[in-house]
Length: 114
Ligand code: AMP
Image (cartoon, rainbow, N blue to C red):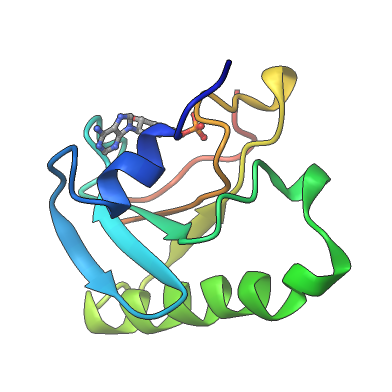
C-alpha cells in the first residue's frame, strides 16, 4: 500500500521544509540536497505522479508550474540563467513519485547532464 508521498506530507506540514512560495495550485520549497546555490522544487498540490502520467485535464496546472518557475527565477535574480528539470521514471532520475520541477541557478550549469 503506498501512502501519501513525501511531498504530500510537506504540503500538509507533516514534514518541515523551507518554503519559498505557495499558492492555490502549488508550493515551492528549497531542495534538501541543493545542486546549485538556488535549487527549488515547484510541486503541484495535486499528487500527479510524473509527467508521463499527467492527464489532459492537468494542462493548466502544468503550465502554472512553469509560470511560477519564471516568477521565482525573476524574484531570485537569476537573470544570467537558470534551468528547469523534470525527472521522469527510474532512468530519468526520479526518486519522489510526485511531479515536481527543479529550478536550478546561481552558478553556470553544464550540459549535457549525466
Ligand atoms: P527527483 O530525484 O527528481 O525525484 O527529486 C527529488 C528531490 O527531492 C531531490 O532533489 C531530493 O534532494 C529532494 N528531497 C528529498 N527529500 C526532501 C525534503 N524532505 N525536503 C526537500 N527536498 C527533498
